[in-house]
Length: 557
Image 1 (cartoon, one colour):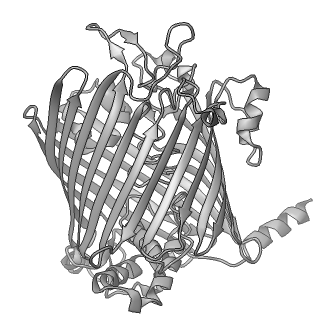
Image 2 (cartoon, one colour; image 1 turned 90 degrees about the horizontal axis):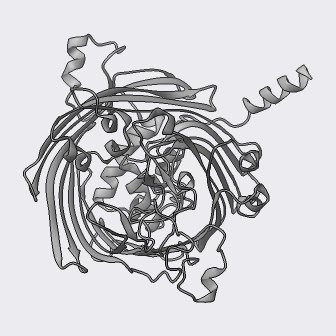
């Protein structure tokens, strides 16, 4: 037996090795570059329905792009050059990379490169496949509200990241950031939406308003045989699941980061992924009312190069116990849930993405909630019609180089994402795991983005949202439930089973966003945001306006 175990270990660590197994965080702009190169058909196999990539995967995409320079604009070539020195180890030299500690230079000499255009690290040591990188993190947010009041907020935070790869196959990652809030606390989440699910922020017991975020994971990668790729990851980081340009119906990432075990396997045209994760319920100041809930999803995708990708998704949300059936990665949970006494929130989804046209991509999702997978075929409009459908297109360089255009429509039927047991509704910390507009709503989303150069990008977004809200009395008591709130499920013998779309208190929202990202020096990123929001209450005949602007300086090295 001992010889057998040793043989397995030897096999695992002698198959083909890669460098830098740890993931690139989803907030990094290299993902936008890879997306545009995918739509342009410079690269293939970019799976943005399961987008978290190891650094070596990003490096491989960049190497492929490098062989197709003739197809690139000057701005794309500049972006490629910048990303190559950051993600491809052999492209890193003393001329384009700097570290504060551990170099041959004196500390005072090193400080001269503090504001240079070199890729910066506090410290790094080792070689490909066995290394450590220590990086500093920091953010400064400063914002003001113009309408309806005059609120201001300043957020300051700082932290540290340690990442790297050992034994050629095992990536590791840890980060921690601690921040303080000055000004109006209620305005701060407009600058940093993650504050809505931060415990210290919501507990609100300390004199100095503060917050913290932390992530950590291990990720193991091997190629068990020719043409196959296997990743196993355990820990916490931001992940998303499924397609969606404005927001994703399956797992949008607007929720707090999940603690998960994730398995990804690729072989030929097949992609298989499975997630087992935990999160928490609604915030409560009462300790005994807090609870853990679980989210699971797995996906089987067929990816045919230069044609299309199509997948089937199985999703479960439950609480109160660890269910072994939902730890089975090849069991179809939607079918098995009834044998477990029909207690849990099961969901099913189909999605697709085309890739046969250069510069034009079309994708869509059908998400069906709970056990009514076939109810939508009846054509009825009753409360059993709990589903989401979304269709969108991404057009790259429709008029001029470096310009992209996104158009997307999403419709969510009443009561979708809700559940008879509020602990099992489709939320984490009370935030919808799925599309941000919630049930009984639809959205037309558009975005225009333009890469000015490798140092600047501008985004213009417009959202038109129609929503039917539940109706409450002056004291806040629910008097008519129309399926407009994920926290309120359908009540037998109380609510009308005829759930008409957009019924209830009708509110139309127009949301405008302007964002300019400016990187004057590498590792120092300025983001300027302006947001203007108009809520028109059609039922009651009034409107509310909300507008604000803020600047964020991100330091990451």
